[in-house]
Image 1 (cartoon, rainbow, N blue to C red):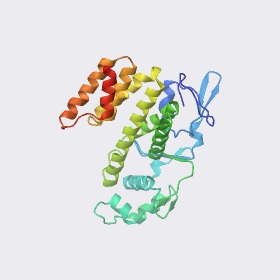
Image 2: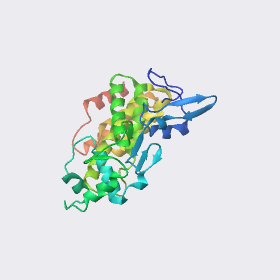
Image 3: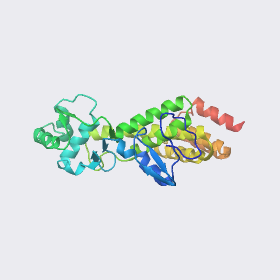
Image 4: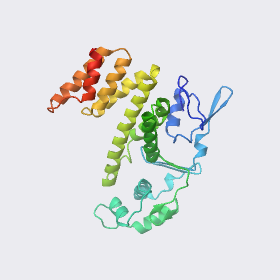
Length: 284
């Protein structure tokens, strides 16, 4: 999915320009399943029909099977937690003790067997392994895959290919994982998503820098956002400096370097060699 001013270089995909109102819906789909067909002056979204099932664990929990919502059928709060735990860990073999600890932190089984039985009426289970259709989209898995593809594209300087996937990962990882719930495994997943979100933001900013033009303001905004999220992480400062310089604001870029230098001075360290080189180029 691209905007009109960008170039398509995915020969095995249908790629079109999209309007602002389409982007939020498209970003919630795993790229590769998203297609738009043009009929005259109208866009018709058909991507959702290409996914056999959809699970959303970030934000409000959603389970969609064969195009129909099924999350209301999950057996209560503990059933939702068990479902989320099994989906999050569906690519590894679980011991019985793990879901017990996930639901009952004291390690005392509070009724796993009957809960599994109820859950089995909603989704198929093979022991402790949840069985979802092959073409299932799980939001946290889609985000991890998307950021990997964005970073791979950036390594090849394919900035246009990195732009869309970086946004998918960015939007998904920005939502709270299982909001309102508290457990060790949930905290671990949230920490992982924070790291994923930072990687997605950095990938999006780098893609914007590589594309240039109308994407430079987005790179500036993303750089500032990275600094707010991680004030001691140099990457945000470096990306913001580059974006401001490309926009024709070298003085502002120098101010950003000074902000970084003062912050690191409080820790008794100096900016990295890469940041110092950017500073030197700005002064040239």
